[in-house]
Every structure is written in C-alpha cells, then in structure tokens.
Length: 442
Ligand SMILES: Nc1ncnc2c1ncn2[C@@H]1O[C@H](COP(=O)(O)OP(=O)(O)O)[C@@H](O)[C@H]1O
Ligand SMILES: C[C@@](O)(CCOP(=O)(O)O)CC(=O)O
Image 1 (tube, helix red, strand yellow):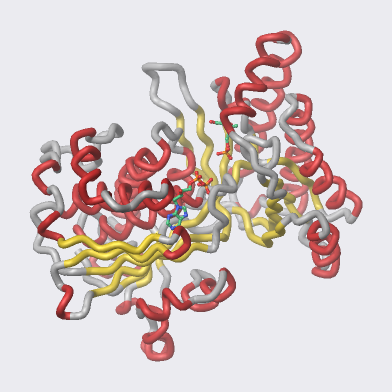
Image 2 (image 1 turned 90 degrees about the vertical axis):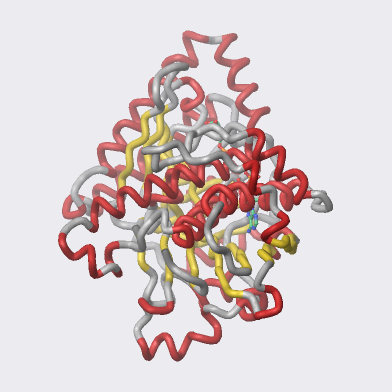
C-alpha cells in the first residue's frame, strides 16, 4: 500500500496485424506505442481532506465529491479467494454511481468519471480514506483508435490498486522481493491491473474485447483471438522484442468501427469463396508476425525487421481488398512509399482514422520531415513514436535518485505543474517515462 503523491502511466496501442479478420475468430496483434497517459495522485490541502477530486483537463472534466457522500453501500463484498474482479460490471453499483454523476453531462466526462468511481469505490471500500486529487494528462489523441480510453483505465486501475494494496510496486524497486518472488508478484500485479482496467473499459465502451487494456497493461505486443461463445478468448503476451520505429498518421477522416465491420460482413456474405481466403491470408500473416515477435532478441536483426515490414504491406493489401481503406489512407501510403520510408498499413477499423508506417531504421530525419510537410498539406497529423516498449508503470518519490528527485520534486509531483503542462511535448519532457529517471514497470 503506498501513499500519495505518486505518478502512474500506461501506453496507447495500435493494431499492427489482423484487424477485421479478428471479427471472424482469427488472431490479431496489437502493440503498445510510446504515446502515453500519465496520472498524478496528490494529497489535498488540509481543508479538503474529506474530498476526492478529478482533474481530467484533456476531456474538460473537473469534479469533486465528499468521500462520505458516495454510495458505498452499493459496493459488493469481494468474493472470498478471488483476488481478481469478475469480468462483468456490478450493475447496481453502476446505477448507484449515476447519483454522484448528476451534473456531469458530456459523454467523455461521464464515462471517465464512472470508470474512476467504479474502481475507486470497489477497491477502497472500508479503507480509511484521505482527500486526494487524481489528475490525468495524455499525449494520445482521443477517439483516434489508439487506445486512449484503455490507457486511462489502466492508469486509474494502477493508481487505485497501489493505494489499496491490491498490488505491490514493481519488483525492480521492491527490495523484499529480492528473494526471487519478484517476477511472480509482477505477473500477479499485471493480471490484477488488467482485470480492473477491463471493468474500466466496460464503463466506457460497454462490450470491449479486452485487447486494448491487455496491451496497455503489459506493453510490448499482445496476440488476441476471440473465441466462439463459451470458450475463453486467447491472449498471448510478447514483451521482449526491440522497440521499433513507427510513424502514426492520423488522416483525421472520421469513421465508425461498426460501419466498417458491417461493410466487411456484407462482402463476406456476398462472396464467401473470395473473402474466405483473404481472411485465411490475414490469419497466416498474423501467425507469422507472432512467430517473429516471439523470437529471442538476439535474432531480432535487420532482416527480422524487414520481414515484419513485408507483412505490414501484405496486410494492408488484403485490407484494401476487403474495402476498408480510404482515399486519404492511400495518400498516406503513397507518400510514404514514394519517399521509401518503410511499409504502411491502415490500422484499426479503416475507412479513415490512422495509418501506421513501420520505418526502416536507416531513414534520415530529413525524409520524415519531408513526409510530414507533404501530409500536413492534407491536414493529416504525424506522430513519431515507437512500437512496443513498457506497459503500466509508476514513479514514486522514494525510487527517484536523490539528486534527480531534488531537481524534479516541484514539477514531478505538483498538481499545479501537472495541470499547467502546455502540450504533448511538455508532458513528455516533464514527467515522461523516457525522460525522467525512476519509472518502474511491472
Ligand atoms: N486524457 C483523457 N482524460 C480523461 N478521459 C479520457 C482521456 N482520453 C480518453 N479518455 C476516455 O476515453 C474515451 C475515448 O475512448 P474511444 O472513443 O474509444 O477512443 P480511443 O480509440 O482513443 O480509445 C473518452 O470519451 C474518455 O471517456
Ligand atoms: C475492425 C476491428 O477488428 C478492430 C477495430 O479497431 P478500432 O478500435 O476501431 O481501431 C473490430 C474488432 O476487432 O472488434
């Protein structure tokens, strides 16, 4: 159990292989990206010790509740001997939370606040609670298919699991685990955080597959296969491959996942003999990508990265055949091809949204700038990021090197500074997992 202040963080994700085929029971692979959400848990000033406050400026949400006024009686008793929560939401708790949500009217604000209260109340019922502020800043675009909601759910779950003692801090900073139990404690923590984050995703999305929170919690990449009713879904984690250079390009073309999925369903119904082999092709290339991503890191060389890029190209071609590309996505692919930057595919549902380019390592920065300039003419936004990397993590005051801690103290754990961060770059520079020493991951 740890006390505020502390920071937690979790990454967004992108689907690299297998979207749409996933709907037909084939495997899909999602990988973490280096765009992340950060949450600061800080203590109130003395006059507000009976209040819990959310500061989620990315979605214009600021609200407070008196802790004692929350509907604690609606929280179910945890099942004995069941450390992880059930995968279904407790509907009467969701209903009871509608009371404290009165006055929060927008969808993004309401669903984020519901997620927070569901996890906060479930895990902290019966504990002696002090007033606290939970503030979120994200470097992820919201609603672009990059898993912003999962990364927020994972941050909330991580922070509250730490506060409630449901998980221990990562073994890399916990000396008492030097007896060799660290790895299993970390594994247990990952499963618990993931299970709570899944309930958070349910609060936001209703019926999510679970791939986004699985990927955000574990980092690296995950292979996910939805099984037919009654059979458990398959989830395999790949955590150790080297992080790969990636461009993530938002076409800003709005699209609805449900519409794209329905269009593919119509095609599948009309041409089962043609679409069947396409789905099988996507299945095979996803299997091959899974094999490559599981190889020991000493085998992840230049030709390994080249093979992954080839699979990206083939996967895009098959998605085009399924009719889920868009002229804007093709502009992105053509521009990246012309500059020989790497291989490009649409990611997620398609029909707009984002494309990803797996960049060749030797490509100079000038070419990336050229691509950026070409694409900005169309109003597209280019994020330079990396594929893979760490999942859920935390930064505690005590695990920061003393000199570093003195240097960063004011900024790192100060609510005022957290809220004043101007943009993505400023968030990364100030609290980022790659800039600040002391971040630890499960
Ligand atoms: N930075 C954030 N702060 C608070 N809530 C967030 C943030 N980012 C995402 N969310 C929550 O996640 C929802 C977005 O989910 P969704 O539309 O699936 O987008 P994405 O594809 O990016 O996950 C928002 O409506 C909001 O409830
Ligand atoms: C098209 C699909 O395979 C992925 C949807 O991705 P996104 O969350 O819209 O980026 C649908 C699904 O698997 O539920």
